[in-house]
Length: 180
Image (cartoon, rainbow, N blue to C red; front, side, top):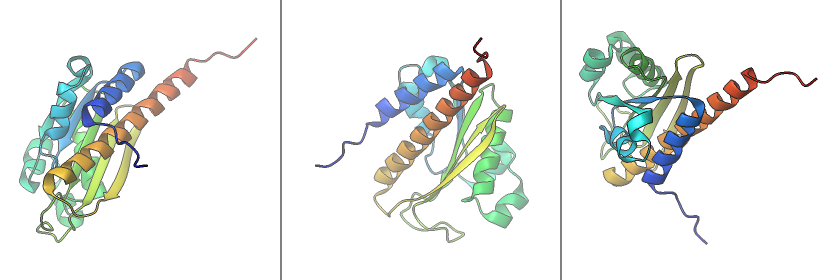
């Protein structure tokens, strides 16, 4: 029997609920998803409370101009890399009032990018104002662009929810008192 994959609206609602429990608000910085992550979050229940907005930086130049990602960082590592994804997430936090940023960069296809990064190479970075930055690299099989974006969104939403739950757990542990 094939495992049922949750729909994007349900994943977005789950992320926003986890963010609320952890006392977090969310902003996005997107490249290959072209604002669709922000749209999914804005449309989900809780979006009005927990989602603060997003930046669409589809090109290298927009990453530099809008987010302030260093030209040399992009030149050295390419726009599709862990250092650039992390820089995007940190810049998103610096330019918003959100407490958690989700950044996505990669190649959705149909062809490799100008730096010859392969279709399906995706980097997602999550930055939290007080806990640091996390990164995951995904290597998706080549597929139709809309299906690729859906897979990327699914991965980013699940990763972000896991980070929200980790922050919530850390906050709860900080507030524990020893048993008498």
